[in-house]
Length: 512
Image 1 (cartoon, one colour):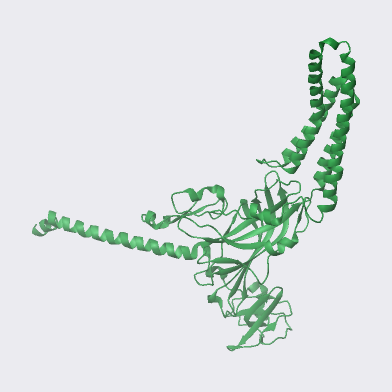
Image 2 (cartoon, rainbow, N blue to C red):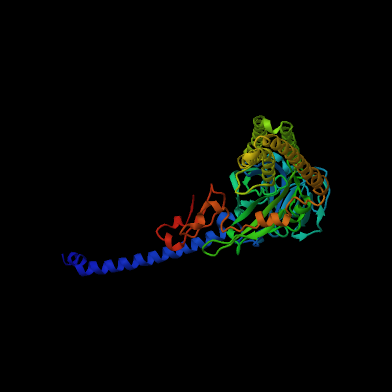
C-alpha cells in the first residue's frame, strides 16, 4: 500500500507531469529541427533536380520546329519544339560505358565478348555474343567517340565509325532529374519523345532531350494591324531557386527556329539568330527567392496582302462607287439618301466581319482607323444634303421680298456647289490611295518596313514585362504565405514557412 500510495501521491503526479512536459517540449524542438532539415533537403532536391551533386549551371537549347496554329481571336499559338538540357554530374565522371559493336568490327580496345554470368546487358539483344569496347563515351552532335579503358589503362580516344548495336546507359533517374515549368501555358504539355543519356562519360555530362507540343497564351499587340509584328513567347522556369540551379543558354549549340514561312506570318530569321532564347530571372517570391528562366521568343510578322486586297481595296471601291449618288440632282434627295445608307451598311458588315476575327482591344488598329475614314467619306454626301437644306431654309425665310425669284437662284447655286463638292471628294479619296497608300505598300514597305513597328519596340512592349510569378493571373503571389507559381494556372505548387507547419512534417509543401 505504501508503494501504491507513493506512486499515486499528488506530488509525484505533478513531478511526472513536469517531466512529461519537458519531454514533449524536447520532442517539439526535435520535430521543428527535423522539419527544417526536411525543407532544406527539399529545397536542394525539389523537382528531382540534381544540383546537390552537380554543377549549378544547366545549359538549355531550344529548337522550334513547327508553328502549328496562331489563333488571332483567342490570342494563342501552338508550337512543336525541342528542349535540350545539358549539365554535369560529378558522380558520373569517369563513368565507363560498354558499347557493343557488330561482328567483324575492328577498333582499339575491342573485347571479343562479355561474361554472360556477370553481364547485365539486355538478353533480347544478344549482346553477350558480340564484341564490345569499354571506356569513356562521348557524343558530339551526330558523331560518337569512346576512350577505351583496358586493364585500368586509358587509351587514345577513337571515333566510332560504325553503327553500334547497343550502348550501356547508367540509371540516370537515381542521380536526379531536371524538372521545369512552362509559363503562359494553356492546357498541358504533350511530350512526344524523351531521350535521357550520358553525353560525356569522362566529364560526367548528362543530356536530357524532350520533343513537345504545347499551346501558349500571348497578349498580341495590334495597333499596326495588318502591318503588325508579334512576339510569340513563353518561359521555361526552373523549380529550384537560382542560387542552386541556374539555367543558361547553351553557347556550344545555339537555339534556333526552323520555321520561316506560315500562311499568314513569316518569321524574321535575322532576329531569331540572337533572340530565340535568352536568360532571365523572376522577380522572386516574398521570401526573396529568384528562379532562373529561359525566355523563348518567335519573331513573326504578318503578311498584309490578304487584308490589303480583301478589305482595303474593296472598301476603296465601295466608297468610289458611292460617289455615284451625285449623278442624281439635289431635288432627288430621298434617292441619294437611300444610296448612301446602302453603302454604309455594306462597310458596316465588313467591320463586323473583321471584329469577329480580332480579339477585343481597348485601342483602334490601323485598319479600324481606315474604316473610320471610309465611314466619314460615305457620310459626307449626306451631311452635304443636310447643310444645303438648312442653308436653303435660312435664305427662304430671310429674303421674303424676292421669294418669287429665289427657288431658281437657290437651285442653280446648290447644283453648282454640289458638283464642286463631288469633284473634291473624288480627288481627295483617290489621291490618298494612289499617292500615299499604294506607294508605301508597293515600294517602301517591302524594304524599309515603314508601317511596321521596330523589333526593339515590340520586345519592349511584349517581351520586357516582368512578373513576380510565372503566370500573373494566378494570383498566388497575393497570398499571405510564401508562394511561388511554378506552372500554368492549372497547376500551382505552394511553399509555406516552416513555422506554420510544425504540426505536420508532410504539410511543408502542397499542390493545388
